Length: 449
Ligand SMILES: C[S@@+](CC[C@H](N)C(=O)[O-])C[C@H]1O[C@@H](n2cnc3c(N)ncnc32)[C@H](O)[C@@H]1O
Ligand code: SF4
Image 1: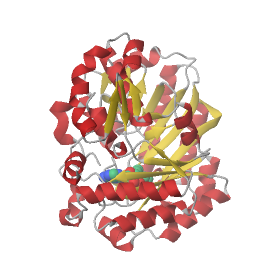
Image 2: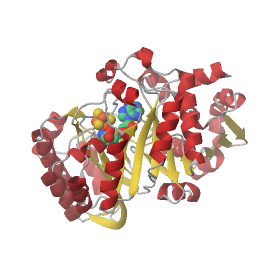
Image 3: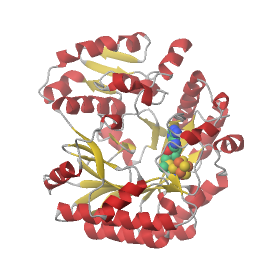
Image 4: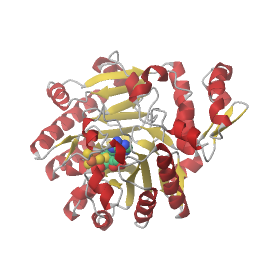
Protein backbone atom coordinates (compact mmCIF):
# COMPACT_ATOMS: atom_id res chain seq x y z
CA UNK A 1 0.00 0.00 0.00
CA UNK A 2 2.88 2.35 0.80
CA UNK A 3 4.09 1.93 -2.77
CA UNK A 4 0.65 2.80 -4.10
CA UNK A 5 0.28 5.87 -1.88
CA UNK A 6 3.74 7.00 -2.87
CA UNK A 7 2.80 6.66 -6.56
CA UNK A 8 -0.40 8.66 -5.99
CA UNK A 9 1.46 11.34 -4.02
CA UNK A 10 3.96 11.92 -6.83
CA UNK A 11 1.31 12.34 -9.54
CA UNK A 12 1.30 15.93 -10.76
CA UNK A 13 -2.05 17.66 -10.52
CA UNK A 14 -3.32 21.25 -10.25
CA UNK A 15 -4.26 22.77 -6.89
CA UNK A 16 -7.66 23.71 -8.34
CA UNK A 17 -7.81 27.28 -7.12
CA UNK A 18 -9.86 27.75 -10.29
CA UNK A 19 -11.41 25.58 -12.98
CA UNK A 20 -10.34 25.69 -15.75
CA UNK A 21 -6.89 26.28 -14.27
CA UNK A 22 -4.68 29.21 -15.26
CA UNK A 23 -2.57 27.32 -17.88
CA UNK A 24 -5.79 27.10 -19.93
CA UNK A 25 -6.39 30.83 -20.04
CA UNK A 26 -5.86 32.27 -23.51
CA UNK A 27 -5.37 35.62 -25.29
CA UNK A 28 -8.88 35.53 -26.79
CA UNK A 29 -10.06 37.12 -23.53
CA UNK A 30 -8.51 40.60 -23.53
CA UNK A 31 -9.05 44.11 -22.13
CA UNK A 32 -12.00 44.63 -24.49
CA UNK A 33 -13.69 41.46 -23.22
CA UNK A 34 -13.03 42.58 -19.65
CA UNK A 35 -14.69 45.95 -20.30
CA UNK A 36 -17.77 44.16 -21.69
CA UNK A 37 -17.89 41.87 -18.68
CA UNK A 38 -17.50 44.78 -16.24
CA UNK A 39 -20.27 46.69 -18.03
CA UNK A 40 -22.58 43.69 -17.62
CA UNK A 41 -21.87 43.28 -13.91
CA UNK A 42 -25.10 43.48 -11.92
CA UNK A 43 -24.77 46.59 -9.70
CA UNK A 44 -26.61 44.75 -6.91
CA UNK A 45 -23.83 42.14 -6.63
CA UNK A 46 -21.17 42.37 -3.95
CA UNK A 47 -17.65 42.32 -5.33
CA UNK A 48 -14.38 41.18 -3.76
CA UNK A 49 -11.01 42.74 -4.39
CA UNK A 50 -7.53 41.26 -4.66
CA UNK A 51 -4.40 43.45 -4.75
CA UNK A 52 -1.09 41.85 -5.70
CA UNK A 53 2.20 43.32 -4.41
CA UNK A 54 4.98 41.47 -6.26
CA UNK A 55 7.90 42.54 -4.05
CA UNK A 56 9.83 41.04 -1.13
CA UNK A 57 12.96 42.13 0.71
CA UNK A 58 14.70 38.91 -0.36
CA UNK A 59 13.56 35.76 -2.10
CA UNK A 60 13.11 32.59 -0.02
CA UNK A 61 14.63 29.59 -1.82
CA UNK A 62 11.39 27.61 -1.87
CA UNK A 63 9.18 30.45 -3.07
CA UNK A 64 6.67 29.69 -5.81
CA UNK A 65 4.92 33.07 -5.67
CA UNK A 66 5.02 35.78 -8.34
CA UNK A 67 7.43 38.18 -6.70
CA UNK A 68 10.76 40.00 -7.04
CA UNK A 69 13.39 41.24 -4.62
CA UNK A 70 13.19 44.99 -3.92
CA UNK A 71 16.11 46.15 -1.83
CA UNK A 72 15.06 49.80 -2.09
CA UNK A 73 11.56 51.29 -1.81
CA UNK A 74 11.53 53.25 -5.11
CA UNK A 75 10.10 50.45 -7.28
CA UNK A 76 7.45 49.80 -4.64
CA UNK A 77 6.37 53.47 -4.68
CA UNK A 78 6.18 53.42 -8.51
CA UNK A 79 4.23 50.20 -8.50
CA UNK A 80 1.77 51.46 -5.86
CA UNK A 81 1.07 54.53 -8.03
CA UNK A 82 0.17 52.26 -10.94
CA UNK A 83 -1.96 50.05 -8.70
CA UNK A 84 -3.85 53.20 -7.66
CA UNK A 85 -4.25 54.17 -11.32
CA UNK A 86 -5.57 50.69 -12.18
CA UNK A 87 -8.12 50.90 -9.33
CA UNK A 88 -9.28 54.24 -10.80
CA UNK A 89 -9.58 52.75 -14.30
CA UNK A 90 -11.71 49.82 -13.16
CA UNK A 91 -13.82 51.91 -10.75
CA UNK A 92 -14.58 54.45 -13.49
CA UNK A 93 -15.67 51.64 -15.78
CA UNK A 94 -17.91 50.19 -13.08
CA UNK A 95 -19.66 53.54 -12.73
CA UNK A 96 -21.22 53.52 -9.31
CA UNK A 97 -19.50 52.50 -6.09
CA UNK A 98 -19.84 48.75 -5.62
CA UNK A 99 -20.25 47.12 -2.24
CA UNK A 100 -17.18 45.12 -1.28
CA UNK A 101 -17.37 42.14 1.08
CA UNK A 102 -13.78 40.83 0.93
CA UNK A 103 -10.42 42.48 0.28
CA UNK A 104 -7.20 40.50 0.12
CA UNK A 105 -3.72 42.00 -0.26
CA UNK A 106 -1.37 39.24 -1.39
CA UNK A 107 2.05 38.83 -2.84
CA UNK A 108 4.90 38.93 -2.49
CA UNK A 109 4.92 40.86 0.70
CA UNK A 110 2.29 43.62 0.96
CA UNK A 111 3.61 44.41 4.46
CA UNK A 112 6.66 46.06 2.91
CA UNK A 113 4.50 48.83 1.42
CA UNK A 114 5.84 52.07 2.91
CA UNK A 115 3.44 54.24 4.97
CA UNK A 116 2.39 56.69 2.21
CA UNK A 117 1.54 54.20 -0.55
CA UNK A 118 -0.27 51.95 1.93
CA UNK A 119 -2.40 54.85 3.16
CA UNK A 120 -2.94 56.11 -0.41
CA UNK A 121 -4.15 52.71 -1.63
CA UNK A 122 -6.39 52.13 1.40
CA UNK A 123 -7.91 55.59 0.89
CA UNK A 124 -8.39 54.91 -2.81
CA UNK A 125 -10.28 51.68 -2.07
CA UNK A 126 -12.46 53.42 0.50
CA UNK A 127 -13.29 56.24 -1.93
CA UNK A 128 -13.91 54.07 -4.96
CA UNK A 129 -15.80 51.23 -3.25
CA UNK A 130 -18.32 50.87 -0.44
CA UNK A 131 -16.43 48.59 1.93
CA UNK A 132 -18.70 46.49 4.16
CA UNK A 133 -18.03 47.18 7.86
CA UNK A 134 -18.28 43.49 8.69
CA UNK A 135 -16.28 42.39 5.63
CA UNK A 136 -12.95 40.59 5.70
CA UNK A 137 -10.03 42.88 4.90
CA UNK A 138 -6.94 40.67 4.94
CA UNK A 139 -3.26 41.16 4.20
CA UNK A 140 -0.35 38.73 3.86
CA UNK A 141 2.52 39.77 6.13
CA UNK A 142 6.09 38.62 6.43
CA UNK A 143 6.72 38.63 10.21
CA UNK A 144 10.27 39.83 9.57
CA UNK A 145 8.81 43.12 8.29
CA UNK A 146 6.30 43.78 11.10
CA UNK A 147 6.79 46.23 13.98
CA UNK A 148 4.44 48.24 16.21
CA UNK A 149 4.34 51.18 13.76
CA UNK A 150 3.35 48.94 10.83
CA UNK A 151 0.61 47.32 12.94
CA UNK A 152 -0.80 50.81 13.61
CA UNK A 153 -0.72 51.61 9.89
CA UNK A 154 -2.45 48.34 9.03
CA UNK A 155 -5.20 49.09 11.55
CA UNK A 156 -5.62 52.58 10.09
CA UNK A 157 -5.83 51.04 6.59
CA UNK A 158 -8.78 48.91 7.75
CA UNK A 159 -6.99 45.56 7.84
CA UNK A 160 -8.83 43.16 10.15
CA UNK A 161 -7.16 39.82 9.29
CA UNK A 162 -3.46 39.11 8.89
CA UNK A 163 -1.90 36.08 7.26
CA UNK A 164 1.68 35.42 8.40
CA UNK A 165 4.30 33.43 6.53
CA UNK A 166 5.69 31.09 9.21
CA UNK A 167 6.81 27.90 7.34
CA UNK A 168 8.90 25.95 9.93
CA UNK A 169 10.56 26.87 13.23
CA UNK A 170 13.50 24.44 12.97
CA UNK A 171 16.81 26.35 12.63
CA UNK A 172 18.38 23.83 10.19
CA UNK A 173 15.30 23.99 7.94
CA UNK A 174 15.27 27.80 8.07
CA UNK A 175 18.92 27.76 7.04
CA UNK A 176 18.19 25.40 4.13
CA UNK A 177 15.31 27.54 2.83
CA UNK A 178 17.18 30.84 3.20
CA UNK A 179 14.68 32.31 5.65
CA UNK A 180 15.84 32.88 9.21
CA UNK A 181 12.80 33.69 11.30
CA UNK A 182 12.91 32.67 14.96
CA UNK A 183 9.75 31.81 16.92
CA UNK A 184 10.18 35.10 18.85
CA UNK A 185 9.75 37.09 15.62
CA UNK A 186 6.35 35.49 15.09
CA UNK A 187 5.41 35.98 18.78
CA UNK A 188 6.32 39.69 18.52
CA UNK A 189 4.33 40.06 15.30
CA UNK A 190 1.25 38.50 16.87
CA UNK A 191 1.62 40.82 19.88
CA UNK A 192 1.94 43.93 17.69
CA UNK A 193 -1.20 42.92 15.78
CA UNK A 194 -3.18 42.10 18.93
CA UNK A 195 -2.14 45.43 20.46
CA UNK A 196 -3.98 47.30 17.70
CA UNK A 197 -6.98 44.95 17.71
CA UNK A 198 -6.11 42.77 14.69
CA UNK A 199 -6.92 39.46 16.32
CA UNK A 200 -7.96 37.35 13.30
CA UNK A 201 -4.62 35.82 12.41
CA UNK A 202 -3.70 33.08 9.95
CA UNK A 203 -0.39 31.22 9.78
CA UNK A 204 1.12 29.60 6.69
CA UNK A 205 3.20 26.51 7.52
CA UNK A 206 4.91 24.19 5.08
CA UNK A 207 5.89 20.53 4.89
CA UNK A 208 8.15 18.81 2.36
CA UNK A 209 10.94 21.35 2.95
CA UNK A 210 14.65 20.48 2.73
CA UNK A 211 16.08 18.80 5.85
CA UNK A 212 12.61 18.83 7.44
CA UNK A 213 11.60 15.76 9.46
CA UNK A 214 8.16 14.57 10.53
CA UNK A 215 9.01 15.66 14.10
CA UNK A 216 10.00 19.13 12.87
CA UNK A 217 6.61 19.52 11.20
CA UNK A 218 4.78 18.25 14.31
CA UNK A 219 6.77 20.54 16.64
CA UNK A 220 6.23 23.53 14.36
CA UNK A 221 2.47 22.82 14.29
CA UNK A 222 2.41 22.67 18.11
CA UNK A 223 4.40 25.87 18.50
CA UNK A 224 2.19 27.61 15.94
CA UNK A 225 -0.99 26.43 17.70
CA UNK A 226 0.39 27.66 21.06
CA UNK A 227 -0.13 31.20 19.68
CA UNK A 228 -3.80 30.37 18.91
CA UNK A 229 -4.06 31.66 15.33
CA UNK A 230 -7.62 31.50 13.99
CA UNK A 231 -6.47 29.61 10.89
CA UNK A 232 -3.45 27.56 9.95
CA UNK A 233 -2.64 26.49 6.40
CA UNK A 234 -0.03 23.82 5.85
CA UNK A 235 1.20 23.80 2.26
CA UNK A 236 3.19 20.95 0.72
CA UNK A 237 6.35 22.43 -0.77
CA UNK A 238 5.93 22.51 -4.57
CA UNK A 239 9.41 21.97 -5.98
CA UNK A 240 9.32 23.18 -9.58
CA UNK A 241 12.94 24.32 -10.27
CA UNK A 242 12.36 24.23 -14.04
CA UNK A 243 9.82 27.02 -13.55
CA UNK A 244 11.18 28.82 -10.44
CA UNK A 245 14.91 28.88 -11.06
CA UNK A 246 15.90 30.08 -7.55
CA UNK A 247 14.54 26.76 -6.20
CA UNK A 248 17.72 25.20 -7.63
CA UNK A 249 19.38 26.52 -4.46
CA UNK A 250 17.52 23.72 -2.68
CA UNK A 251 19.35 20.41 -2.97
CA UNK A 252 17.07 17.66 -4.28
CA UNK A 253 18.80 15.15 -1.99
CA UNK A 254 17.73 17.23 1.05
CA UNK A 255 14.04 16.90 0.19
CA UNK A 256 11.85 14.39 2.03
CA UNK A 257 10.50 11.50 -0.07
CA UNK A 258 6.86 10.98 -1.04
CA UNK A 259 5.97 8.75 1.93
CA UNK A 260 7.64 11.10 4.35
CA UNK A 261 5.67 14.01 2.89
CA UNK A 262 2.44 12.08 3.44
CA UNK A 263 3.48 11.34 7.03
CA UNK A 264 4.42 14.99 7.63
CA UNK A 265 1.03 16.19 6.39
CA UNK A 266 -0.78 13.58 8.48
CA UNK A 267 1.21 14.29 11.67
CA UNK A 268 0.48 17.99 11.33
CA UNK A 269 -3.21 17.15 10.90
CA UNK A 270 -3.20 14.88 13.97
CA UNK A 271 -1.45 17.53 16.11
CA UNK A 272 -3.77 20.35 15.03
CA UNK A 273 -6.97 18.31 15.37
CA UNK A 274 -5.83 17.17 18.81
CA UNK A 275 -5.38 20.83 19.73
CA UNK A 276 -8.94 21.63 18.67
CA UNK A 277 -8.53 22.80 15.08
CA UNK A 278 -11.09 21.75 12.46
CA UNK A 279 -9.68 20.29 9.21
CA UNK A 280 -10.71 22.32 6.17
CA UNK A 281 -10.20 20.63 2.81
CA UNK A 282 -6.73 19.20 2.29
CA UNK A 283 -4.45 21.92 3.66
CA UNK A 284 -6.30 24.31 5.98
CA UNK A 285 -7.28 24.26 9.67
CA UNK A 286 -9.47 26.66 11.58
CA UNK A 287 -10.54 27.17 15.17
CA UNK A 288 -14.14 26.03 15.54
CA UNK A 289 -15.33 29.64 16.09
CA UNK A 290 -13.57 31.00 13.00
CA UNK A 291 -15.84 31.93 10.04
CA UNK A 292 -14.04 29.34 7.87
CA UNK A 293 -15.02 26.46 10.19
CA UNK A 294 -18.54 27.89 10.38
CA UNK A 295 -18.68 28.14 6.56
CA UNK A 296 -17.62 24.50 6.28
CA UNK A 297 -20.39 23.32 8.60
CA UNK A 298 -23.02 25.60 7.03
CA UNK A 299 -22.13 24.90 3.40
CA UNK A 300 -20.60 28.30 2.54
CA UNK A 301 -16.97 27.30 2.11
CA UNK A 302 -15.45 28.29 -1.26
CA UNK A 303 -12.18 27.96 -3.09
CA UNK A 304 -10.58 30.75 -5.07
CA UNK A 305 -7.10 31.96 -6.03
CA UNK A 306 -6.21 32.51 -2.37
CA UNK A 307 -7.10 28.88 -1.56
CA UNK A 308 -9.98 28.08 0.81
CA UNK A 309 -12.10 31.14 1.55
CA UNK A 310 -15.36 32.28 3.09
CA UNK A 311 -15.81 34.73 0.22
CA UNK A 312 -19.08 34.02 -1.57
CA UNK A 313 -19.10 37.07 -3.88
CA UNK A 314 -19.64 36.16 -7.54
CA UNK A 315 -17.20 38.80 -8.75
CA UNK A 316 -13.56 39.05 -7.75
CA UNK A 317 -11.66 41.98 -9.19
CA UNK A 318 -7.89 41.55 -9.30
CA UNK A 319 -5.46 44.47 -9.29
CA UNK A 320 -1.72 44.38 -9.88
CA UNK A 321 0.74 42.46 -12.03
CA UNK A 322 -0.28 38.79 -12.56
CA UNK A 323 -3.50 39.11 -10.54
CA UNK A 324 -6.46 37.00 -11.61
CA UNK A 325 -10.05 38.15 -11.44
CA UNK A 326 -13.26 36.23 -11.79
CA UNK A 327 -16.53 37.64 -13.13
CA UNK A 328 -19.73 35.68 -13.75
CA UNK A 329 -18.65 35.24 -17.40
CA UNK A 330 -15.17 33.87 -16.65
CA UNK A 331 -11.58 34.59 -15.60
CA UNK A 332 -9.24 37.42 -16.54
CA UNK A 333 -5.54 37.77 -15.78
CA UNK A 334 -3.34 40.86 -15.69
CA UNK A 335 0.09 40.96 -17.29
CA UNK A 336 2.57 39.22 -14.94
CA UNK A 337 5.45 41.32 -16.26
CA UNK A 338 5.74 44.29 -13.89
CA UNK A 339 7.25 46.59 -16.55
CA UNK A 340 4.51 45.84 -19.08
CA UNK A 341 1.86 46.09 -16.40
CA UNK A 342 3.05 49.56 -15.36
CA UNK A 343 3.39 50.85 -18.93
CA UNK A 344 -0.10 49.66 -19.91
CA UNK A 345 -1.76 51.24 -16.89
CA UNK A 346 0.25 54.46 -17.38
CA UNK A 347 -1.26 54.64 -20.89
CA UNK A 348 -4.73 54.40 -19.35
CA UNK A 349 -5.38 50.85 -20.57
CA UNK A 350 -6.47 47.80 -18.60
CA UNK A 351 -3.50 45.39 -18.38
CA UNK A 352 -5.38 42.15 -19.17
CA UNK A 353 -3.35 39.61 -21.16
CA UNK A 354 -5.44 36.45 -21.03
CA UNK A 355 -8.48 34.81 -19.56
CA UNK A 356 -11.12 32.17 -20.03
CA UNK A 357 -14.77 32.52 -20.87
CA UNK A 358 -16.67 29.72 -19.14
CA UNK A 359 -18.71 27.25 -21.20
CA UNK A 360 -21.69 25.42 -19.70
CA UNK A 361 -19.50 22.33 -19.33
CA UNK A 362 -16.77 24.38 -17.57
CA UNK A 363 -19.33 25.67 -15.05
CA UNK A 364 -20.65 22.19 -14.31
CA UNK A 365 -17.17 20.73 -13.81
CA UNK A 366 -16.05 23.80 -11.83
CA UNK A 367 -18.88 23.24 -9.36
CA UNK A 368 -18.13 19.52 -9.05
CA UNK A 369 -14.43 20.21 -8.45
CA UNK A 370 -15.04 23.04 -5.96
CA UNK A 371 -17.57 20.95 -4.03
CA UNK A 372 -15.18 18.02 -3.82
CA UNK A 373 -12.24 20.21 -2.81
CA UNK A 374 -14.22 21.98 -0.06
CA UNK A 375 -16.56 19.33 1.36
CA UNK A 376 -14.80 16.10 0.22
CA UNK A 377 -18.20 14.94 -1.01
CA UNK A 378 -20.26 15.54 -4.13
CA UNK A 379 -23.48 14.26 -5.63
CA UNK A 380 -22.80 14.34 -9.36
CA UNK A 381 -26.47 13.59 -10.16
CA UNK A 382 -27.68 16.56 -8.14
CA UNK A 383 -25.12 19.01 -9.58
CA UNK A 384 -25.59 17.76 -13.17
CA UNK A 385 -29.39 18.08 -12.91
CA UNK A 386 -29.11 21.64 -11.64
CA UNK A 387 -26.90 22.44 -14.63
CA UNK A 388 -29.42 20.86 -17.03
CA UNK A 389 -26.99 18.06 -17.76
CA UNK A 390 -27.04 14.29 -17.46
CA UNK A 391 -24.97 12.50 -14.81
CA UNK A 392 -24.71 9.51 -17.17
CA UNK A 393 -22.16 11.51 -19.17
CA UNK A 394 -19.79 11.03 -16.20
CA UNK A 395 -19.88 7.21 -16.34
CA UNK A 396 -16.33 7.08 -17.80
CA UNK A 397 -15.15 9.39 -14.98
CA UNK A 398 -16.59 7.01 -12.39
CA UNK A 399 -14.69 4.21 -14.15
CA UNK A 400 -11.52 6.27 -13.96
CA UNK A 401 -12.06 6.73 -10.19
CA UNK A 402 -12.13 2.97 -9.57
CA UNK A 403 -8.39 2.80 -8.75
CA UNK A 404 -8.90 5.40 -6.00
CA UNK A 405 -11.94 3.41 -4.78
CA UNK A 406 -9.99 0.13 -4.73
CA UNK A 407 -7.17 1.75 -2.77
CA UNK A 408 -9.52 3.23 -0.15
CA UNK A 409 -9.07 6.91 -1.02
CA UNK A 410 -12.60 7.43 -2.33
CA UNK A 411 -15.99 5.70 -2.01
CA UNK A 412 -18.82 5.95 -4.50
CA UNK A 413 -22.50 5.21 -4.00
CA UNK A 414 -24.80 5.74 -6.98
CA UNK A 415 -23.90 9.18 -8.23
CA UNK A 416 -22.19 10.37 -5.02
CA UNK A 417 -18.49 10.46 -4.29
CA UNK A 418 -16.92 10.72 -0.84
CA UNK A 419 -13.26 11.19 -0.09
CA UNK A 420 -12.18 8.95 2.82
CA UNK A 421 -10.01 10.03 5.77
CA UNK A 422 -7.00 8.37 4.08
CA UNK A 423 -7.94 10.04 0.82
CA UNK A 424 -8.22 13.59 2.21
CA UNK A 425 -4.64 14.62 1.30
CA UNK A 426 -5.23 13.14 -2.18
CA UNK A 427 -8.48 14.98 -2.93
CA UNK A 428 -6.83 16.77 -5.88
CA UNK A 429 -6.60 13.36 -7.62
CA UNK A 430 -10.35 12.83 -7.34
CA UNK A 431 -10.95 16.40 -8.58
CA UNK A 432 -8.56 15.83 -11.49
CA UNK A 433 -10.79 13.02 -12.77
CA UNK A 434 -13.34 15.73 -13.64
CA UNK A 435 -10.82 18.03 -15.33
CA UNK A 436 -11.50 17.93 -19.07
CA UNK A 437 -8.30 19.90 -19.85
CA UNK A 438 -5.77 17.97 -17.82
CA UNK A 439 -4.02 15.57 -20.16
CA UNK A 440 -2.29 18.15 -22.28
CA UNK A 441 -0.90 20.00 -19.28
CA UNK A 442 0.21 17.34 -16.80
CA UNK A 443 3.88 18.23 -16.81
CA UNK A 444 3.39 21.76 -15.47
CA UNK A 445 1.89 21.00 -12.07
CA UNK A 446 3.35 20.01 -8.71
CA UNK A 447 2.96 16.65 -6.97
CA UNK A 448 -0.39 15.66 -5.39
CA UNK A 449 0.83 15.54 -1.74
C1 LIG B 1 2.92 35.37 -0.38
S1 LIG B 1 3.62 34.26 0.81
C2 LIG B 1 3.07 34.88 2.40
C3 LIG B 1 3.45 36.31 2.82
C4 LIG B 1 4.92 36.67 2.89
N1 LIG B 1 5.45 36.84 1.57
C5 LIG B 1 5.73 35.66 3.66
O1 LIG B 1 6.32 34.78 3.02
O2 LIG B 1 5.79 35.78 4.87
C6 LIG B 1 2.49 32.94 0.59
C7 LIG B 1 2.78 31.59 1.20
O3 LIG B 1 2.89 30.63 0.15
C8 LIG B 1 3.60 29.50 0.63
N2 LIG B 1 4.53 29.09 -0.43
C9 LIG B 1 5.44 29.86 -1.07
N3 LIG B 1 6.12 29.12 -1.97
C10 LIG B 1 5.62 27.87 -1.92
C11 LIG B 1 5.90 26.66 -2.62
N4 LIG B 1 6.84 26.58 -3.55
N5 LIG B 1 5.17 25.57 -2.31
C12 LIG B 1 4.20 25.61 -1.39
N6 LIG B 1 3.88 26.73 -0.69
C13 LIG B 1 4.59 27.84 -0.95
C14 LIG B 1 4.31 29.92 1.90
O4 LIG B 1 3.73 29.24 2.99
C15 LIG B 1 4.05 31.41 1.97
O5 LIG B 1 3.90 31.85 3.30
S1 SF4 C 1 7.67 33.17 0.68
FE1 SF4 C 1 6.90 35.23 0.95
S2 SF4 C 1 8.71 36.44 1.61
FE2 SF4 C 1 9.49 34.54 0.78
S3 SF4 C 1 9.92 35.10 -1.36
FE3 SF4 C 1 7.88 34.14 -1.32
S4 SF4 C 1 6.48 35.82 -1.21
FE4 SF4 C 1 8.51 36.61 -0.61
